[in-house]
Structure formats: C-alpha cells, structure tokens
Length: 427
Image (cartoon, rainbow, N blue to C red; front, side):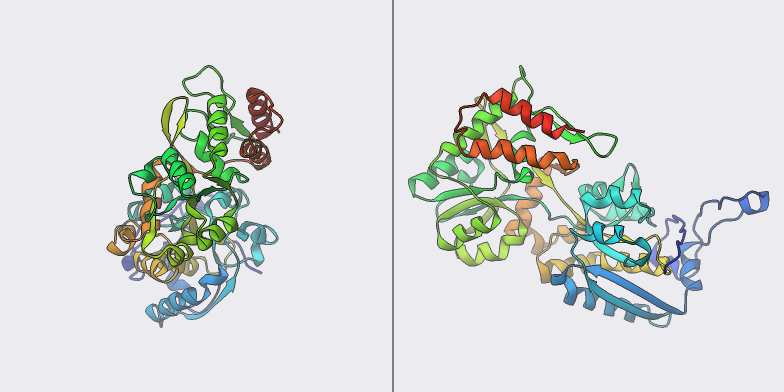
C-alpha cells in the first residue's frame, strides 16, 4: 500500500535538481516552534534520498503502450545510476482514469494520463497535489492547456496533448477553402451534388457549437455539481429561439446528415459525405478515404437571426497526473515531466498524430503542416473548456434531436428551450 507523500513546490530546473540545488519549501505544520521552522526537503533532495529501488506504475491508453515503453526506457537510461528502476506500463483509458482511481487511490498508478474534465474530482479527492516548477510549465505550454490543468492559479497536472476538440473536415474536390467558411455554402454544395455535410446532434458536446458564440451561456456553478444556463434567453440580439430556428433551417437542408462518429466515417468512406464535424482521431481514416481532397479548417459560420455567427466548440486536453499517495512521488513527478517534455510530445505527434500542448512542439513545421492539427489550433480561439455538470447532456440531446427531426410535433420553440434549460439546471 502506498503512503501519502507531501511534496514541496520548489520552482527549480531539472538540471539543478540533481545537483542538490535547494528550493523553497513550505512549513510543516507542528505544535512546537522548532518544528514550525523546519522546511520540507527540496525536490532535488527528495530525489537523492530516494536512490534505492524505485517501483513505479504508469497508466496510459492501450494504443499508447508501445510509445510509453519507449519513453520509459529512455528515462531509465537517462537517470541510470541514480536509482534502481522498476517501471511498469499498464493499460487504462484516459476517459476511465478517474473512476479507476476513485476505487482505491492508494492502489492506483503512480502516474496516469487523464482527460481534463476529471481534474476537479481528482483534486477534491486528494489524488493530486500542486506540481513542481509551475512557472516553467506555464511558460512551456499553451495557455489553454495550462488553464485546463489548473484550479484557480494552481497547476495540478502536466499538459500532455491539446487535441481533444473538433473542427471541420472537407473534401477539397467539392469545397474550396472559401466555401468551407460558410455552413450555408457547404450545405448548398452538398445538396447540389447529392452529398452530405455530417454532424452529430445526438451529443451535447457538438451541439454547444451553435450556442457558444451567441452571448448565451452554460456552465458549472460554484458547487461543482449543478449548472447555470441562459440558452432560453429572450429579447436579446440573438435569442434562444433564433438558434433553434437556425438549427431547424439546417436540418431541413437536403445536404444535412445527422449522424454519430461511425456514421460520419462510413459516409466519408463510401463517398456520400464531403464535409463534417469531427476530431483528430479520424484524421488518418479521412485522409485515406479522400486522398488529395483531404482538407480541414476551423468550424464554419452559420446563419442565425440574419447574422453570420462563428460556430464555437468545446476544447479538451489530456494531461499527466502524479498520485499523491505514491511511495516515490519525486521520481514519479520527474517521469511525468519527462513524458510531457517537448521532445516526447513531438514523438507523440509523430507516432500517434496527437496534438502537442508544448508551445515549441506545437509550432514545429510538422505539426503546422498537419491539416487536422492546424484546423484544431485555428478553432481554439472559438473554443472553451468543457466544465459542465452531468445534467447537461440528456436535455441537450432531447432538444437537438427534436430540431434534427424538424420539430415534428410543432411544439413552441420557446417552450422547448425552457424545458431544456430547466433540465440542464436541475439540482
């Protein structure tokens, strides 16, 4: 069983860590004055003190295992002689990481990859402590990735990828880059060629794109559980009913196809879909299907209340966390830094086509030449973190599917919006 290990927050470079350079610590709580004046060992001192057998377990996605093993092997070689390492990589999906840890933190992995929307729960459960070298991490990584790894001004994990969002794929044999900026034009071209633009309206993750840039809001209350929502707003420049009507107009186009991710890929492969909203996980398959026609861009504008509104998106990030209960917290933290450094984020892009969170890696020619990653970065200025409670999903799905079906019962749009908002904000 792992014991809880308290760590300092010394802001010192790795090159200095292993030479015994002392960092600033925090006072250890105690009743007597002498204990109050004692400082925790610096991060470097913790590493040097932990020079015997170091057993670490790393959790990562199944498809990342070969790459993770390569990174771990190189880490052990770089720090050969500093300790005797026994590092094991185990399969655990990023999406299921939180649930696996909550079943027993002390039995969980020493470090683990997880999706950013799990951060609050992990911190609240005591699974994560503030990381070392916070300024360095902020300077090295994209602003959005740093925000996703933080609560308030405190970083609790190291950014790993900045690619868990969505954008527009389009076949340039039919649609030009100029066309791709307008959803009206995309639908017009698709209909004229008996083709489709595909988007998943069964998922509130994608449906957010219609409301996110309208001035109406949805988000998580301070209790961390319930939501606020103004998507049923009336009497403003853009109201909820304006968005609902815009969605009905889109759904009525013969060029529109409401389908999930599998349906999108099927349509791309059989040639019936020439544009659609998806993410980087489909980049290889789309490129294989469209060949020279393969292209991507930020989401288009859509017509709403007589205006052209840029479609918004939820952004998502993956990160590496270090278990606060690790017996070898300092070495686990150093390995987390190694896994997320510029070189290994560049390696992750080469081997797994995952978008880097590291600024320098993200600016590389290889990344910038990737249509999918470039489109995701272009969309990022219209994206926000997914910070919503569980009651968001079902009401949004119910509303959006009614729109996709053309509101067959002819229900009052404001009443439908009120029902959705009430469901989203339910306690």
